[in-house]
Length: 275
Ligand SMILES: [Zn+2]
Ligand SMILES: [Zn+2]
Image 1 (cartoon, protein in one colour):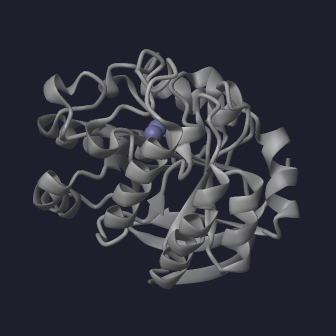
Image 2 (tube, protein in one colour; image 1 turned 180 degrees about the vertical axis):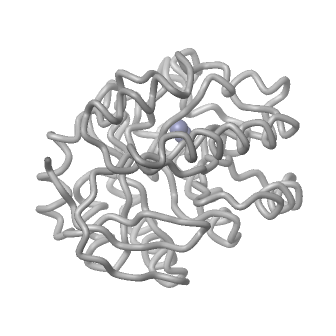
Image 3 (cartoon, rainbow, N blue to C red; image 1 turned 180 degrees about the horizontal axis):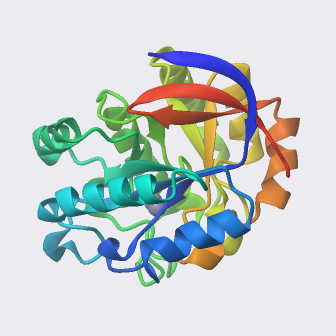
C-alpha cells in the first residue's frame, strides 16, 4: 500500500456515475459543473462495470471502457484549472469474471477502483424492483450470502475501496445482531489488507435512511485503523454531495479527521472539510 499524509483540506465526492451505466441522468459535464458550483475540489467518476449482468442494462459494457476512460481524461484536462477530476470504476465482484476484471483494470491507468456487491450469488440486493426490496427472502439468508461474497471479494486485490459495505440494509432490513461478529471479522480483514471503506451517503435517500456504513460499523473501522473515503453515488448531477451536512458530523464523531483521495491507485489523506 502506498499512502502519504497531507494537511490539505479538500471537499471531495468519489462516487459519481455517468449515462454509460444506462440508469444515470445527464452528461458528464453537467456533473462537473454542479460539483464546481457546490465548491468541490475533487470528484471521481466511478461508473458501473458489472460483468455478470446479462445485456449490460445497468452497466457499461467492457467494450465501452476505453471510451469512458478517454472521456474522463479529456474532461480532466479541460477542467484542470477549475476542479480535480479522477477516473475510476465501480466493479462488481464475481468469481467467474475475476481474470477479465484484472485485465480491464490493468489496461488503463485508473485513479481508483471501487469493489461492489450488488448481486451476491445472483441475488439483486440493490434495485427498487427486486424481490429483496419487496420483502422476499429471509433477512438472515441475504446477510449470510452477502458476507460469504464479501469475504471472497476481500481475497482479491483488484479494488482500492469497498463501496457501500452494508448495502443490503437499503430497504430497511438492518444488520441482524447475530451477524455483528461476522462484521468484526470482515473489518479486521479489511484492516489487515489495508483497504479503504467508502462512506456512501446515498442510503439517506432510501428507506433505511442511513449512510453506508452505519455509525457502529464506521466506529469499528476507525478503531481498527481502516481509512475511509466519501461518495454520494450520484446518478444525477443534483445528487453530487448529497447529505454531506448530515454525514460529516457522524464521520467526525466516529473519530475520523481524514478522507482518502487517489491518484493512479496511490492514496493520499486529506483533511475532512465541511465548507
Ligand atoms: Zn453501487
Ligand atoms: Zn454506484
